[in-house]
Image (cartoon, rainbow over all chains, first blue to last red):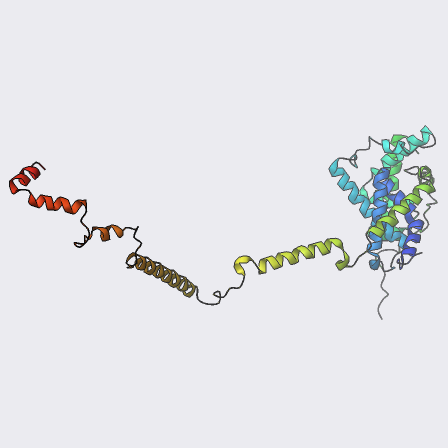
Length: 175
Length: 177
């Protein structure tokens, strides 16, 4: 359903279809903070509903929702960082929130922890492109739509991100 | 005949739109691992989230401004304040408010002067009225005005007896005084 919400029923259908993408993107950005990600998801759809007239269909509904969610999550992270409610982005020592998601094995947990540390330790633009590319299965033009950059720029960022991730994970011994 | 323009930059290779990068097995491993354990979130979790979103949207459904209780309350207070400012007790219209204030003051002064004159006239009338109460102050003067035809009392007989007393005796009587 890639059109603006023309009714409450259409909006509810869009929520059902896209809430997982929105929630998990916010969850990854928020380092596994479930409550924060839930708030971001709720605010995302609320903002989408109130600003539905602004959606002109130039991009897909999914990328539009992800753009809203991404910006809201970044704002929430900055706000939380100012309140010292979560660890700063550059401090990857405390990753307890990842362990709280009940992974299947301890080995998986360690690898996931190392991967999260590496991805979230990237430069912000490389981190954003990596999250959208790896876990939202977006194409580079779609990533460009979400982040407001060109497709080529998104591809360059992803290239540098993979190089940095390989180097960092090789030092950490994960993945 | 001009030569064809040769671009300085070679054409970029077609961009792979597919999410998977065939040249990197690492990318596939990272995608498989994920940063969060998505299996920990069941359908019930998302049903609950969807209900919360619907409730939040319903709460923020646009209501016409004149139907909002807060707007009505604000409008009522504003109307009351406006009426209060326009019709303060000191600002109420009065008969003299249209004229010169000095004229109103002169009217009041004339009224007081007339009242004072009336009080003065009334007091003078009572003071010099001929029909004065006998028990009042001027009754004594009337009583002191001795009528020679009246029956002589104690005071009159004393004077008559003094007239009969010789002068030498009266001198000796009054000299010490």
